Length: 392
Length: 84
Image 1 (tube, rainbow over the protein chains, first blue to last red):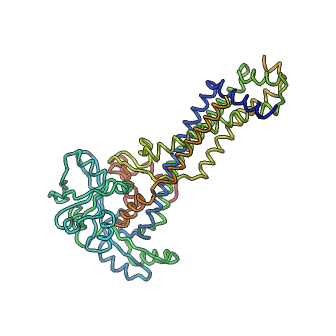
Image 2 (tube, each protein chain N blue to C red):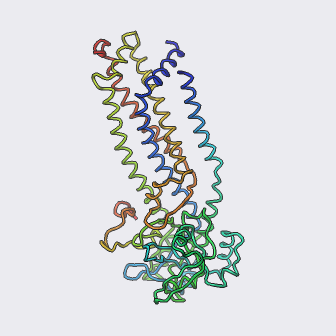
Image 3 (cartoon, each protein chain N blue to C red):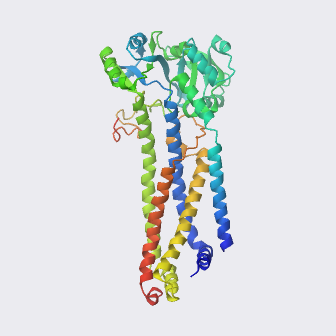
């Protein structure tokens, strides 16, 4: 048979029997779409977090009391500075403020704006900010999620914090953090360090924890030992532990979907196999007719292979393209809640497109091989039986 | 039917082209720059997980607690599966 005639018959079979193929294409598109969307989302968040992680200090030190993190004394800063090889020691004051009426919480971060590095960072983040005016009164800069939440609760200009002493502190909303920072700053409130201390009831000589860098990686284990010799109630968190935590968190969630995918895939392949292997199926008659008019087994298998290869390719492209639009253009509504949660403030994140081509080709391979096997094995079984028996 | 098939192929190629175009032309620098700036300012890189007050918002730094079952770890932590 000439190639043109074969191609014509192939397209004829595909389009004339489209009602037969449309079910398989639809199910395939849904399975590939769901898996690709989850993997796109997981890769995008992981990739972005790894990029930002470079900005965090190599080590974080916090005081432990009764097995729980406690406020860290500021005199630890000088003691850490004395350790050889340590740079960029910075205290952090942060904590969650619980808004009881709606059971929501914000992450309040206190920044020491007397440190020129911090003022520079703020000016880079919010271009044109009037720092003098900002530091003059009790002001705060809020994340997009916080702003929307406060506005919906009629706190349009300021918000009143309830302090541990029972007093109230009114803080003005000065500005909003850029929308692009929503992935980490959606529920964040940035304010001067003294204000954060007041709201959390921290003393002047207390911070939440201390971060620092050790540029020489070969020294890392040595530094941890020195810290444990210096303080007995200390917990040291390394940057590599945080990286591992992120990887575990998102691999676990992606892995859950992978298990669901495998279950769905096996079920779908069984259905396909059953359809072709059925005694009175139309496929059986079709193959019988082709064999009766003189087609060889090889020709029949070639036709079935190409026919199903087209179905798999069309489904794969449609599934992946739909997943891309859903995640990177629509922002993965509903699905993002699995990765970022949905119990607190709504987070409107624009995910940075990241496609791992290795994963995409694996999906294609792991989908194509079982799909073709589920169709070609019964087709071959029919093709080797005499045409008369096959058409019975 | 060959024409219909070729139209389908062209349509799929167009869709793939749109995706490839968006992927290459997407401005990755601005969001990464902004996120880097906020991380440099606050020294906090944990994603803004929209979790209940009992669950940790800043990963690894906050202990999880559940008022009903104090020992029960939130399922997304899975410390019992993955080695810390």
